[in-house]
Amino acid sequence: LISLGMGLLGFADSFADLVGCRLVTGLGASAFTTAATLYLMDIGTPFTRTKTMAPISAGFSAGAAIGPAMGGFLATQLGLRYTFFLVGAIFAGAMALNSRVLSETLRGSDMSKKGGLQSELKATAAQWRPLLSERMFRSVLGMNIVYWMALSGSYMTLLPMMLVSEDFGLTPAEIGGIFAMTSAVNVVCTQPAAWVADRFGKTLAIGVSTGVVAGSMFGFPLATTLPPALAVLAAWSMGGTMFGMAPTALVADVVPPANRSQALALLRTTGDIGLLVGATLTGMAAEVTSQGTAMQLNAGALLLTGIWFQLACRQGIPFATGASKRL
Image 1 (tube, rainbow, N blue to C red):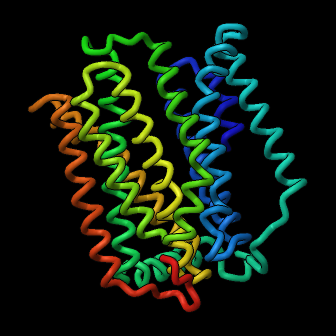
Image 2: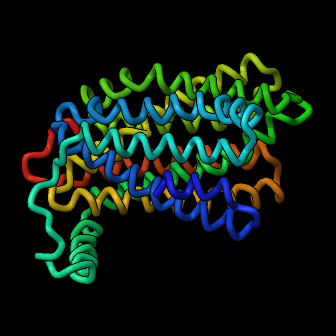
């Protein structure tokens, strides 16, 4: 689907075509992310799951660092249309390679024997009810949606505008370099963050990471020159790296294997809702107050949610038999 959507973008000549192609690409990206994460869950154990999942996080960070530079170079040399054709071909090649080198970890799944898609959807709804009835799982979902709301509003919406403001006055190329720097920090910190989460517990990692990210969000508007701003962004990136893997690994620990795919889907859905809502709410807050104040409001909401999450986890009981004690 990603290959198809990217390739079709090369033929897009209207806004409707663009939206349709992006929809196909988004569906493929959603399926890819879910399947890749589930694959790593299957081959990992509760004691090493975060470290097993760390390479995919590092890969995303590396792609975020390299992608904009490569895309700009290819668009300059080939033009936008042929750049999309090339990217679509690369994804098609990756699909062929994966089909050859990866072995299936899900055994005995034959939808025709289960009654088809309708029965599968009913089974999915039946799986959601017990998942959402568990306090521990609901706490992870709540923490996840607030984190992504804060990240969408602060990092993805306000930060670029603040970097081009009079205080910094950076060019697009310089802003791209800063985002590449933060992605590089993610790559370097992925394995150490995974070790901390596996060694000291996922809930503690989530608590520490939300504190670091919230502190960075609050501190960035106070930085009026570039050196301290870069230091704050580096700390922000380190905190985000630790958070990025911990909720998924925690869900894998506390959810029975039969329900993991649905639990992961719900976790991703809450993140997507946070991304959708966060930018809008933060933009409205920035209009009423200021960009810096809106970012600090996000920091306060994230910090309070992190404290609530820690308290909720102390009272919650994991509901997967044999789950790791290092939660």
